[in-house]
Length: 277
Image (cartoon, rainbow, N blue to C red; front, side, top):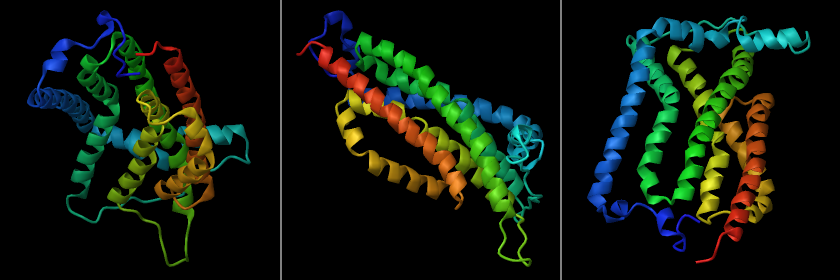
């Protein structure tokens, strides 16, 4: 466990960290936040410099029949083949394009710098960990980053194309024409990607909760049905109101829940095998 006191002295947390006062911790955290913010700012500026290319090749790409997902599904078979409808993106406010350009740059900055953000978080908590725990946490930096990026890519390449096609094709009558504003489109694309990246962090969250003894494999197994229901309710909230898109996000996240049970079981086993205080 994180707080076991029976480990060898060389495995103990840094004594200097224990002697730091509350204000010292706040000051240390402030610098970690500043460095992480600088990382976000650098990638945001790069995105802003190449704004036209970013919008053309990334943001608006799911609106085009040449998008990788549509081409792949059409390559698989005629049954799975579909393409997005023609959806004109409009702006209604004078500064909408400017502010949406800034917003997209910041979001891309956060996504691109996520590994560094987590690294700074890790550097803040690492002095309070044992040497054996630091080795585990070092590996978690890579795993956490990979899971987040995979979740974002899953939302971008899987959820977004299906959702855009469904919402863009849906109509309540001939008098209604789908012409979303730029801000509306950006908000939906954000909803499809960043929350999905966060949802893919479930095994890591469960790992830490199991480490500090809040959850265990028995508890997770007992609430399987409730977890299944909650996951699909959340999927229904963050996705368009069609069953296919909800399934596309609900099933992978529930699969991660099952993986989390395995992770919690491993942590529980390691705790049982470790020497008692």
